[in-house]
Amino acid sequence: MSLQDKFGRQITDLRVSVTDRCNFRCVYCRSADPENYREHDEILSWKELERLAKVFCELGIRKVRLTGGEPLVRSGVDEFVKYLSGMGFADLSMTTNGHLLAERCERLIAAGLHRINISLDSLHREKFEKITRTKSFASVMNGIDAAQRSKLGPAKVNAVLVRGINDDEVEAFAEFARERGVIMRFIEFMPLDADRHWSREKVVAAAEVYERINARWPLVQIPHEKSETARKYRFADGAPGEIGLIAPVTQPFCGHCSRIRLTADGKLRTCLFSKDDHDLRAFLRDGASDEDLAAYIRSAVNEKEKSHHINEPGFVPPNRTMVFIGG
Ligand code: SAM
Ligand code: SF4
Image (cartoon, rainbow, N blue to C red; front, side, top):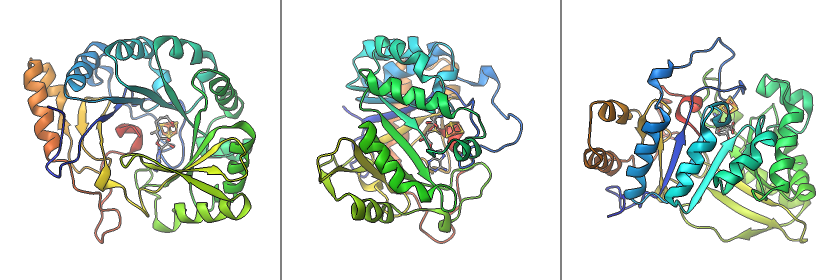
């Protein structure tokens, strides 16, 4: 029987963080502080990840997205993609900052990757460098080009909008979608940043993004599956490219959530904003059988939170921030 929670939601999507390490330090995600990574032995080995992937597959997971940290900094990720591809997941994707993508794209495709999401928070080199605290603008742009030219195209390009930092670029990003034919997705800033600088005033609501783009280039909604996080639009004038709006803060989609997450250190999280996580790694390393693991996952999923509470008084952000959970 497939995975289901006590509210009747079918759980078919798994996000796997393969590392907590990252070569960027985006201001809305990581802190500028020195590294505070987990020790290597705290992170699931590829063998452990393969074993869990098999259990999840048998439990009815159909979509797997690899994330991090930055998934491309962990060596062996191509082989893991190949392993997952061999298991026959219907959808196999990755979220990356794009820095290493140009050189890795073809190998990922050969390994069986279906789709790619690339983060890009500014179209201006200097601002990009400030946000990511890197000098990687050109390599990320090359990564987007490489993905777009490859079988992974059309690439999804993700921008997290933060008021006062990059909200002036909404129209420029839409133009980028039209010129390059990419799927440009705007993500609302969530209270998952390491520096705890999030505030409601810094969130740029998806409704505002819609209005601004629609005023310049009228948009037509594209039907979407209920469990999809993004509202999708094409340009009415027939220009290439697509717009996606992801509004976890102003229009939560918890009622249709089909996702669970596995952190790099082997914790199962049933919501981005879960207060607690479930220690699959301890269970695995204690010698649990596949059946034990499946039963444990089932019972954790059954208790999946009804919704996050960002919009309620007294909301407390989770201890783990995005870089440790895996977006
Ligand atoms: N390093 C890869 C990347 O940046 O694409 C994958 C991991 S990153 C944690 C996954 C996604 O989470 C990215 O699209 C990133 O922009 C998003 N993200 C990180 N912190 C966020 C926050 N506080 N609010 C909203 N999205 C966030
Ligand atoms: Fe790294 Fe991605 Fe977080 Fe940026 S958003 S710091 S690239 S994990």
